[in-house]
Image (cartoon, rainbow, N blue to C red; front, side, top):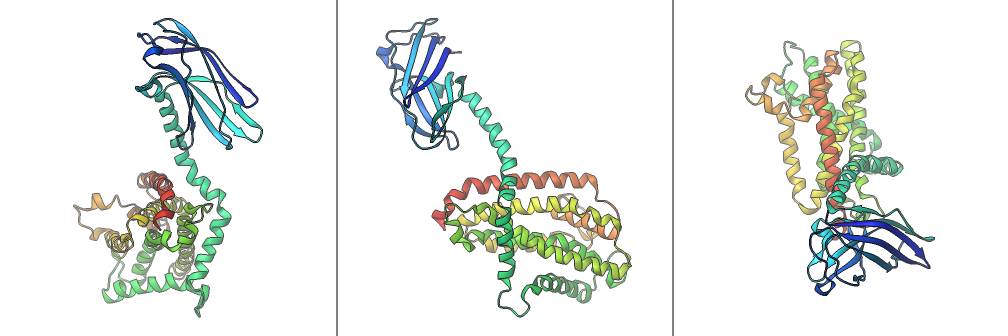
Length: 407
């Protein structure tokens, strides 16, 4: 402990703030005003950690030896702009720096300024290290709560933009919204024609084409929504540049629209699949009720990647072309159109960590095998998806202020 503060008070009169304290020198060296020692204050914006005011100095009346104390009195006015502020009162040495930046204890006073004036919390002693720990804890908490709060508070906007996106794709076409059903259906039929008829792929010991069709389409269900959203994410900010340039528009909701639109496509595909399953097998297994447990990590994973790619796409304009190639590679490295047993045995431990592989396998478990997903793989999928979700939003949130200048 280099300095101690006692009997600290904060008073406000006619807009003037007066901070009084008794400061004891516990540093082991004499404080000499003749050498530039003084007390001062800084006022920060706590949200951005921006220095707002570098205030006047208060110089002790004489030298303060180790173990001695000196009165401290500072008077100042708070900024007029409403908001939260943080006042730091600390010793300093002119031309040498502030002691609070060197780890010394300082007086910390949080304040709120509004139309009624300034209101102060009780002053307390703090250090840069303790503030850093508190800031890290607060940032960690915000990292988990802010993405959810963004979706929750802007749900009506997300719903409107998703509806606009889906209808806008097919506006002026003869099929209209019917293409929302036809697109996944035609895509599935195309892949089935290539792998099921031309290449005559079979599923296990089942020689029938229906067995392969069900196996293939069950794997396509999560891939449809995932690839649609991730494939569009790198160019999303450019696509909605007019919204990005608006200062009050919550741009972090745009990737959410992608994911929601992809889920609409998947919803129609699931309905078509269940109808086909009912026709082929005569029933739908009860284990299909596990699907919400799979949809949550799928949404978290997809949204986290969309946030990450949407932000990165502003800086790397070729990312859209690269992602198209990577998605194609990802598709063929995932056992969607072929059996898991066709994967090389040496590569299976690595490829088995692919989150889409885990999703595809889980979809087949609940829709075709009539059993619950494997818990060992499922909890890891949830954990990875949650990490990607939080990290993707943090990346987007940190870079979003520069979007308008680059687009």
